[in-house]
Image (cartoon, rainbow over all chains, first blue to last red; front, side, top):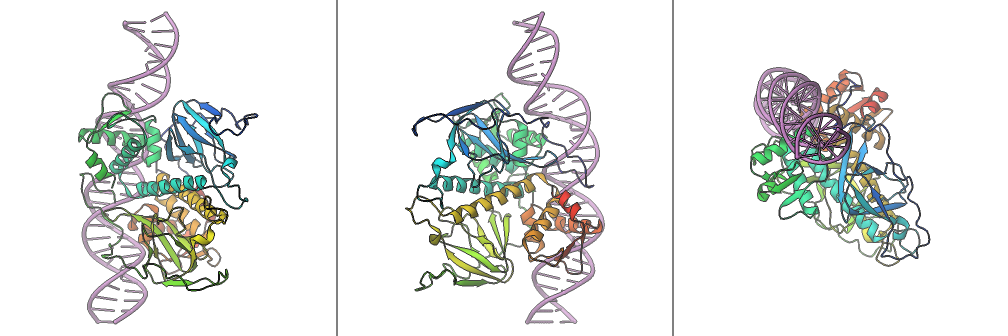
Length: 234
Length: 234
DNA sequence: CGAAGCGTTGAGGTTTGTCAAATCAGGTGG
DNA sequence: CCACCTGATTTGACAAACCTCAACGCTTCG
């Protein structure tokens, strides 16, 4: 990206823009007559690249990821995209303070989510406050957002990628120090404010330096030198 | 910034690092025996570059800006800085979900703040929830943070500066389309993920193109071509 | 007046982006 | 099972944006 010096120049994107919004279900169907049981939640399944919600949609429900992975992102008019976060099993996403979603969400791979009603989180004592869970979720997002602003504003490509890999390692299972990324290079690029080529080259560079290992597959990494990675991630 | 290819290289910063943390008052004194009057709040004054709080400080109180301007920011170990937001008269800042500040705050110029106790915002009904005010404040910050991530990750220098100027114009009084910035170039640079030189050059470029005017002082701008600015800011 | 701090400008270098092509992996059909 | 096709990833050559270093001008203040 970053090409528009004269005022209306096309920007190169890290991905092809999908011509139409692909939606699986517009509003999740209310699950008839369930007796408020806390254990059993309705679930929905999404295929890769399915949109779960888009900016401006009602935020009456939110989601808890059961299996798979999700990206949440915002778009500029010309298609440039900033992925603000990736979500993995156990993470809640789409929980908003207001009644509309501030960003869009899409499945990165085949994904199952649990559907929650935001109204269930409301504190029963009057309508003036909000639940502790909602507050905690907002806090976590804000903290994450602040960290990501530091990454985007201060770090170079090597530091960005190192930070990213450590972040993923901390949040996904993986055997030993091995991690398996569900997302493509263009998702990583749009998350880190880089291009796919720079992501690819930086990964190659880290591997060349022995900081990470690459056992075959493009999306599998072994974090070889954790100290170096931590140092890079500041 | 962006120089460290070998693993431990110095980074050039947009400012001199202040040798010691300058603090005016460590913990604001509890204002003795005030009868919970809502109209009269205790105030504190800060001089330029005074730190109001730092990352990790107790967040038992927060602030409402009366006059002046404040920056909130996070630092990396080597001194690189990301200013996540500027605050102006009327803005609340330092309001955290948790009990510790996630970032630091400093006065940009002579500044007066109103001191609020966060506990006053607690919803009376039990301790499980939180007040609507707190929630609203968190939401606003999150929304702002998301917008800023788009700026940092997707926009080029020209777009960043245009977005910045429009944002300031929308949030400060200013006569007509004229704005008066309280902050130095290095604050702007650390907010936009640029260097001071690039900020300076980009401003000069916008002025050369007639998009903005510069009536004398370095921190005064006339927003001449709002359409162009809006277009640039996407 | 001299010093210091802020802002601007210029020259040149580095990082990252762009474009293009090659390679690789996975899926499909024969 | 293999050939083929498609999409993802990697790599190379080159260009552009932005950064770095350095010098200079302006303003303020002692």
